[in-house]
Amino acid sequence: MDNTRPSKINDITLKSFGIGVLALASLMVPAQQARGQEMQQRLAEIKQSLAFNKQVLAQYTWMDQQIISIKGEQKKEELYNVQMGPDGKPQKTPVDPSDAVNVNLQFARLPNGGPFHVATESINRVSKQPTIEIINTNYQHM
Image 1 (cartoon, rainbow, N blue to C red):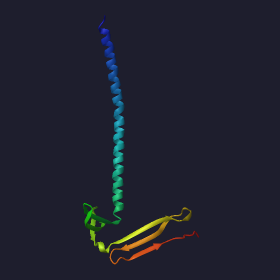
Image 2 (cartoon, rainbow, N blue to C red):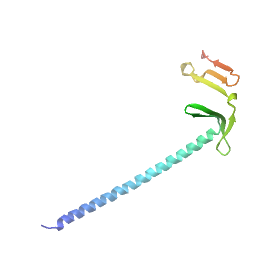
Image 3 (cartoon, rainbow, N blue to C red):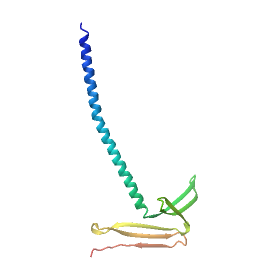
């Protein structure tokens, strides 16, 4: 039996396999580069979105209520008026909870698919407990 022939076949098979692996690897490199570019683009979009959200948030103020409870029992409540400072960080101003005002609004759509409007409005103040309730109904198209 000739031992050189099987080694030539194995050699050819190995070379073919090696070429196939190199070809596959050369196809994967551009795909990985494209994925990397997509990731960089997505990261840039996220950064842009965060910057925009921060800019828009700077135009608002909001209330921050912090309630500390231990084993279900409320121990401390703090209320703050918050707005973004010039340094881009939230600035909190303490608010006396007895001066707090709760405003509840319910919106409803006008007839025939019109825009939303304030259907009911309820204003409650903690101290002296006055309540104002406004109900808007029976809208008619002119």
